[in-house]
Length: 451
Image (cartoon, rainbow, N blue to C red):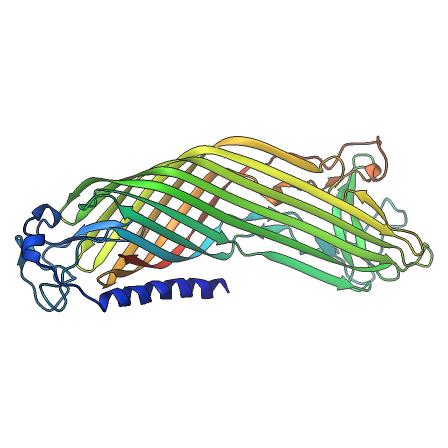
């Protein structure tokens, strides 16, 4: 669906471009351009759009079948049918790009496990669990214990700008970039075979604690289901000014400066439901519904400064971008959890906290950090029509500090706190901001329109 939307946007640019080309206007180049030689030193000066829009001096390269002198230069690429069809400077640029990017991702702990049929629940006592327990040779991880969100994600980047001067040495613009990383989802249902479990470290199982597991489905004991969803999203917005620093011999250098906003978020939710079918442990039919949710938002506000360099040869333009943003990153985390117990003939009982979310770590938390965000990019542009270009490029963006949902999970749990306050033992799980760096990189495919 997203890919269709990007194709539609790009197709719209193409239709608009053909519509404008189909209605050429005639100009008296003798009076318009010969009287303003500073606009076309050695040729007509126009600009390429793309990353921040690009003025280009076209000299000694004609795109039409005929060439001729204009104030000492050649006709530009816009002189296709007649030397009197050269349009004036186009002061507005707009672009749409499809992004195929990879990101740094996040490290998921082991969240769902299983064991082969016949694996005992314990070694004879409740404090010696085996089925679904981490560290046991028979246990395997069904979900988690890997890196998530580092696969290929799809997104878009849209830009619009306006030259405030005819000679295109000062302009303003805005750019929006968004990306949805590859979601990770897992779901499993069992009547007991296969075994389904949620692993954790039980701080009160034995002195010093030991690995344990909450059984979701086990033969003759319980049946149920478990689902996990991990999502990430990314959005930036920029408002910038572009100032010409130097321009000569097909090269141009611009100073880029402005405001930079970034919002990067992630969410991780785990839900399990199981029903007691153990006749030796009534009441049979009692259900247990556990829900854990970890949500993170990273919001950056800062200023950006950089250099945009370009080199033009014929119909081809090469652009190099390097900039850095400095500012504040507000990091907000929210942890929620809930347990619902329903016994036959008795109203449901709802308590705060699931399995990995307890009263010791549930809540909303914020912190602020100074962050730097460098960005580099390279783009190759090819002219198709007088006001339409195709582009392909590479971009890399880095954030020096980031919090992700998986970093909030504490696998150590003190089950004594369920339904009792105060409770004996260690206050676990606990909350802590575990920050890491973060990057995104990938290929950009787009079209640029000038009008």
